[in-house]
Length: 141
Image (cartoon, one colour):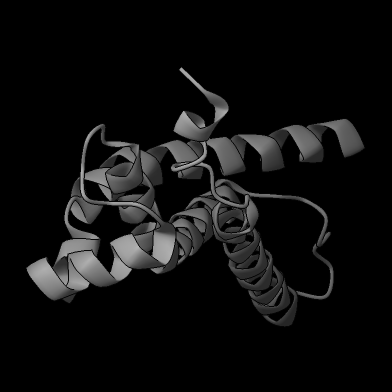
């Protein structure tokens, strides 16, 4: 097996990293808005730094929302990468594969399997991000 055999599915990491960037930008934006809402509705004598269970549920929903948006945007890239990994196929490069898939199977094929992917990813991300926020809260005392 030669080095050229591996280059077909090797794409720049930028599109894959883009999903993570989109996820965190949306997550932090929602988190900031939740904090602003809590601050605006908090009573004057209440300590704003005290977190409640509803705060973490809100953060779980923020994580789920941001992951859904990011995954939906980046999913066509994942589909093309998967097609490029297939041995002995007609797919040669990223843009050639993208155009061929759209031409032969339609735009909907770029999102085939998205629902299953989201069912697996959303709970994982929601739990991971809320756990992270709990740990940060506990460490900051």
